[in-house]
Amino acid sequence: MKYLIVGLGNVGETYTGTRHNIGFEVLDILSERFSVKFKQERYAYKTTFSYAGKSFILIKPTTFVNLSGKSVRHWLQKEKIPIEKLLVVHDDIAFDFGTIKLKPKGNSGGHNGLFSIESILQTTNYAKLRFGIGNNFSYGHQVDYVLGKWTDEEKIQLPELKKKASEMIISFGKIGLERTMNMFNS
Image (cartoon, rainbow, N blue to C red; front, side):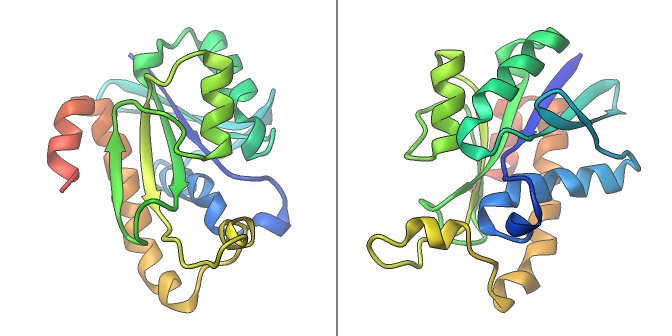
């Protein structure tokens, strides 16, 4: 059984350590845990590991967040993975920093990366791991906020939060969406 796990983020040093790149950072935790390295392939940095008899294919799209759909479609088709086995990890301003929730389906909520995926796949019926980054910005400054660096206080909490998100991904593959939601969403 194969799962495609997509971490949304932007490539390049400029974006390293920004809120919008939390999807990349969570996948980095998994690559470290399972001692696998990302390699640049078509439309993404990709790596694979196996756990509990499941194959996890991790991708960090190189198309930039707002064009992620192209990469997601390519890897779903190439690996012949059904949409039910897709999980997209992304930043979410609708949740306070520190809130992490698994969502079985639903629209983009204004997230351009999710909008790209939905437009290209023609569906909103795929799982999302929503990593709350808060919305501590004034009107008209959302882009600056999501592309901004973590605060010192947030940096202290990030390692534990990224670990939790990575455990949710493993659980998604191991015991399924519903049971993982019941275990972790509170």
